[in-house]
Each structure stands twice: as structure tokens, then as C-alpha cells.
Image (cartoon, rainbow, N blue to C red; front, side):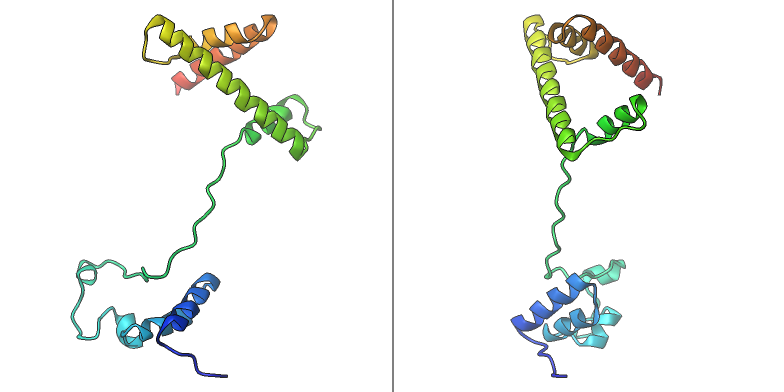
Length: 165
């Protein structure tokens, strides 16, 4: 097995690769290449033997020069809520990914319409606070007949349940 270089950009690459794989020994080799002795780094002391600011306070010293991998931000969807409602109505039914995407788009569209309508109501009444009353009126204006009655009753039930907690 060949000996690895402990200095220069190659050592940093090795340290990055080791960190990605979850290994520490190779990452320590890169620290040695930066002018810190292996044993001194593990003790938390620098070359001269003096304690740094963070070491005096008892903070853990990390390897800040190695960039961490960014996690992908999770996108918010209505998928879990759609699934829960589906299981309340039809326990035996399932839903495909494509159908779930369509339902999610539908929910986003309805939300946007209700919010836009509620904001219009706020502007006509010269108010600045969006409350459940404006949302209820927006839903009544937006949805037709029996559907709006059911939506308003479910919405008011949800609001009272939330206020009780």
C-alpha cells in the first residue's frame, strides 16, 4: 500500500472523501498536513501548546474548512392529508403517484383561489387582518351550492377544534 501525502490539495481531497464516507482516520491525516500534529489535534492543543478561544470555553472544535453536503429542502405537498382523507372514506382504495400529483395541484389551485378572494374581500372592507370570517365568505363565493355549505361546516368545525386546544 502506498503512502499518502499529508500536505496540499490532495490531502484535502482525501479528507473530503473520507468525511463523505464517514471515516475519521483519513480526515486526521489532512489535519496533520495543515501544520497540526495528529496527537496534539486530538488533545485539543495547537503547535505551541496554548489553548484557543473555543477550547478554553469548552467548545468542540470541528473541521470548518471541509464543506458539509447540503440537504435538499423538502417540498411541501398535501399528499399525506389527501391520503388520510382517502383512508377515512375508502380503506381498501389506494392512489397512484400521478393521481396524487393531480390532487396536489388541485389543492394548490383551490388554496390560491380562496386566498385571492379573501384578500379582495379585505381590500373592499378596508381591513388588514385576514381572519376565518374572510376565508369562510371567500369559500361561499367560490364554491357552488351544496358544496359550499359542506365546506363551510367542515371549516368551522376545524376552527372550533383548533381553538379548543
